[in-house]
Image 1: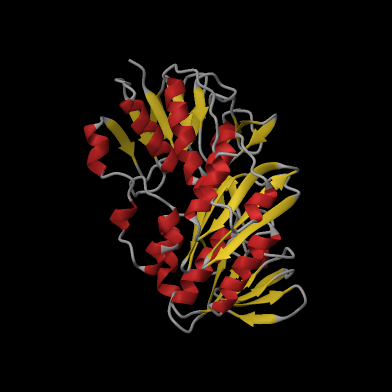
Image 2 (image 1 turned 45 degrees about the horizontal axis):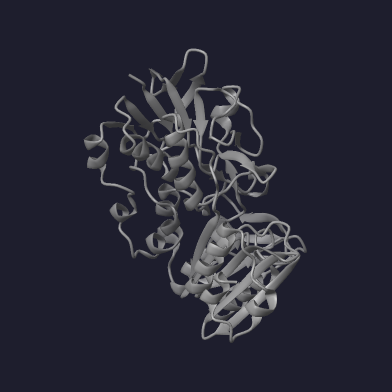
Length: 402
């Protein structure tokens, strides 16, 4: 009977093994993870968990009993050291495990600040795993000085938590504006103002020369020579797909582990899903770093491992929580040439991205109605009139009828 092995016990890996069982796979399933915790959700790490508002058990995607009940073998705290595609075996913890089909859900890992500029000193952290956040939690004491390198969503979420806990927070962003890679100037402006209102200092167009300190970080020196004190530093400078195992096994890599529309890699018995996988998208290739994609793609791959033969149709969506603002994003704004603002209405505002007259994406701040309407429009291939969208008198749900 077919033995399916899944490497990577994060959101995608957990979704994939659950879907295999739900869809009737009766053979062996082994899920291997290098962390010791059972599969858990990552988004609350930089928010509720860091704030102390969520216990570790509430992070778990399922109770550990689920895996035993579903006859899913969990091997945790054991990184896979090699894949042998010809023999169809993986090496882990001194053992060699055979597989019939293998899925790589190896996720991603944070970019670290280079050791050459002090990135390996004590007091310098990344925000990715439970261990990362456990290591830094004790640093979050009111009155302490935190410097965050990188003005993306991870950095800004950490800044929001720190500000709420009474820390002195400075965010450094090398680009001309925060969120430049992922959002329009309007969205950047919204969050710049939100953080300023909570006392966070945001320094844009600001390069980092090096970290200061002897063994432990005590400050940062900026590219212009300015020095800022710091009790600790968080690096929020992006993530990289987990491709090392796949590369060593000889699989094709293209901005992640290259898959076809079904999730199959260049090896017919190896599949991939989640942050680490790139897949065909609108004539090009796409790799999505989101919970929604990790779940949807993993479930699609599980079905295809079992013979469904259904191409994966991505429906990109994302979110971020900062202070009392919930940002929800539908679609991908790549290639936009105009932005239509709707609102503000109370504390709700949304920004709609267009290429020509085609709606690509929407950023909705405290506006779940705009998010839901935008998501449905994008999924249906509909584009509302820009004038109607900008008109406060337009009822949102009427845009779906146009």
